[in-house]
Length: 315
Image 1 (cartoon, one colour):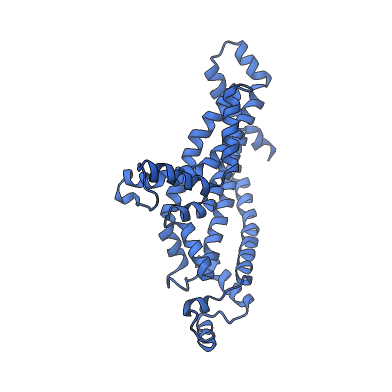
Image 2 (cartoon, one colour):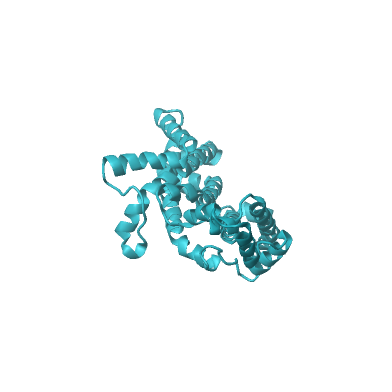
């Protein structure tokens, strides 16, 4: 297991290298000049050229890439041109709201999706099954920002139960923290819940039709024991896969939801950085998100072996 984990960690190095190269050159090949944005429309060409030289933006792209990747290898993601602070520090300042939002959205998605998926599988073909599949199809088809706007209209504007936007850190109290995160978490987690519910239903249906389940029923085991002890464990690998992937998607997808609900997280940081062409921040944030994504997939892969010994034997 340790040897396999070591190999998988080494295999991440070229993946992250390719991500770093693609991110850097895509950003630097897009139109826009940070120096011109900083100085405003009234600035002269000479002023812009002087500032570009001061910031090192007039150097060849390949030189700037070598300097950036050299810094990344030593843990330095660079310095924000506009915020005048290390990129790693800016990311840490904005990470709290995004982490809270992602965890709460994933929690909501799991507690809704897995029971519904199991229920739909046990009621296959019945009205309950059709209703769950219909709602999940609606969740997959509806953009999270549209769900967010609907929730704001209903719970904030009409009913006045929850705030329409904003954020309260955990240090201000758990109640206030959850109150501000509930609507954005629901809008972000609804699509993921739909995906997990459909996968849970499909995986459970496959397992429930196998012979060992019939044998368990013939032995007189209680249906709850059969479903949760025998069927759900054997159906867990596909569910774990889609749950892990949904977590990775939530981290990246929080950008739009944070903009809708005015949450000062990583999403708002990257949107502001794109508008200002703050290259160092964009590169740093995208690289961190990509690293999280590949590490989450690595953890999922390693968990396969814990859930199913046959996976370990095949490695």
